Length: 277
Image 1: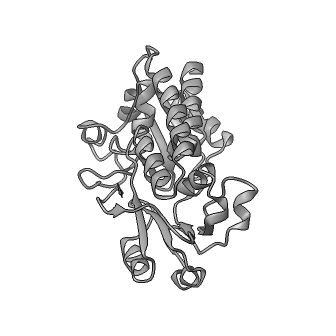
Image 2 (image 1 turned 45 degrees about the horizontal axis):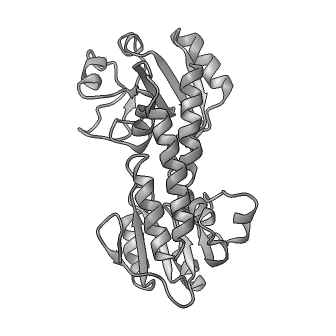
């Protein structure tokens, strides 16, 4: 038996297996585990691996799943995520799908457990262990390097500007290279003194909004503009760098925020990025 992110126990799948994934990075992982033939549903945001993923029917988005269409496809297993899918949708799916697997990686090393969870349930032990070995090698390599500490802001949206707190997968990924994200601890209150922030954020908010200010910019060594969920471009990065007078990099959001099999290349990508900047 294997336990998912909320402690549910799952037995090894038997008989006909029909898998629906409502999580883009998990869809990619299921293909990497050799489960393409068992895939019967995905969201429209599940775009990797190309072109193989196109053969899998779409059932809406991560937040607006077409439940009736999913029911028609008759999955035996549905993989969901605590952050990406709505709880009420998941509860509805439980009414007609016998096995709902909940995922919630919070740090790069959590992928090791995710690989083994899905590998165990779907009988892909060898493939899961190969991914574990590949990821562990990248984690060991990046942690061996003496990275200088840098304070960075990782922007995911504008109008309003939004970033990530340290209680996120993205921040914990960046921390592998000793890149500490703003805000952290009292950072928000200090930089927002005098009404510099665009709006108050709830304590512990994971994706806070902010406003650029001189006080904030002084705290930063580097600004990162992610290519997702907002589609920042090099033009955005160039314009913001001129405005702030601080280095601004356009970074691949999939590499830094997607867990699953993408994490292997993601850690390698981060090491190269940090070494170059």
